[in-house]
Image (cartoon, rainbow, N blue to C red):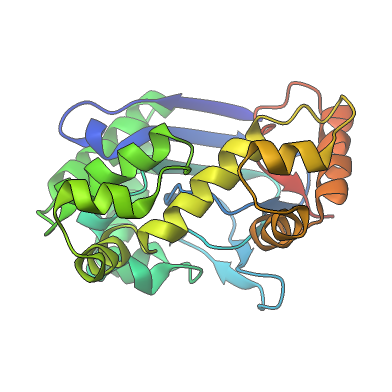
Length: 279
């Protein structure tokens, strides 16, 4: 597969980690994406793809692309063959300035890009992207569209400062300590976080703690799961296993097996790192 990415310039650099272009044959027809504090926007330029938000949900087809706010559980992505898209990886607070609704409405409920920006605008954007000569030009066009749609969000700076503090500690900092420092009530913080991020501060911290723990695993080496849980601050291993299943849809042992499968089947693949084979 071909994968290219770049960071945006101001004013979007404080909201977005990167813009990317993806094209080619995916390593698996279906990939499982663990929950992570990373909203996503995909503008689809190929055949429709399918998303299943949660193990018990029905798969839904998306033709023009999708918008995913901060998820709270694993979700499954079904790629067409071949696939082609342009997308955005947002910071946890970065999607809200481009939405017509609170981010919480999209938590574990992916929306079409048409629902967010309207059919005529999305159709025009997709035509311009398809006509572009290079992936770099395509990413530039998407950045221009985002800059044009950027709007002011109440409480964004507060949410950004708190989220940054949570991320810096891998989700281990007490939310009450940050709230006291911000001189804001827990009720106000929860309301603003759900509007901007899609989840409460505590839920975001759980996401950071889990992501930091799992991304640090070396699945090739033997894993002492009790030690992993203790090092991450889980009060017991049973709690860790429950949260692991919630965020990945897998047990810790099964997760390691699936990650090893990806490494074995597709060494050095551009998508290696976070997605897991769902086949």
